[in-house]
Length: 412
Figure: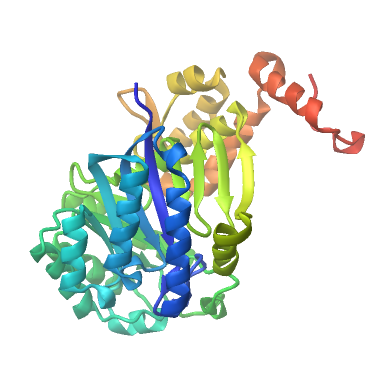
């Protein structure tokens, strides 16, 4: 069976940085973008040996704002990937866009080159809230961008929305959802506002203008109920779609499939080896073009790591996790984890589906961080004597590292 791969390309540039954003992104001049583009092309062409070992069935150009970077550059990167790897004609190819940088000519170029999916950052239908967030578009521009993309032949369009925003009420959020549904997108991502310390929005912490946890929970549950009513199935905590329009690329992350990243701050996981690149644009450019030092982290993941990731990522999805898969893939018993899931079931947080898979309910998704933490604790409680493969991992670690006695964690 041929090995399949997803490819992610990070474009870290925006016209301006939004007040809530802590992603690797920054405003930049054309000169910086040109240098970065040169580095990306070199990075891709220099990776042809790794790329050609796989068939690629999903590509994702994310950011930042790829539409600000420009369709011509995106197409050049796409062509470099086509020359360097084995990209299937049936691949899902996504480009993120913001309304103010969505232009007809740009869409024509992308469509002609083979881009078949767009993700448009709408965020809110309230222009006042958009201004508070530091967005550079109005809702009317968002509508126009969406309709323009449809007129140019894009039949797979996702929009991003946010709730729990400063001064946003449940009625505001309901209005945003209603207006979004009128557009009839194929996919909708709905994210609750998360405030990070290194962003301008951090000044809103403890502000009465922010929705409380209970109010944000109400918005989330309203979202799930409303979108389901209009035919948008929830297939992941924050993602909803019409039948057949799940994001093929994002499913690779949630299903622990192989993916390879290019660009600053991009991450990869291939054949259980996980690595990431430096998040500083200048260091990435100089590393690729000069000294080759661009790897910021590298890890050969073990079965123990992957078993934990299977729980963390699988329980984010509507598909959930399976005791049989867990046992077959990771050679470990599921009984302790299932006991915890049965406890969640009594509280209405989890359900066992007819196909034998466990998943969270909508209420469970609201508590997912806490509940997943409890599942990982249950996983860790199983003694090493019932998991010989775990002992093998630790024995291997002992050959490489010396653990001080005061830090000893594992016993047999």
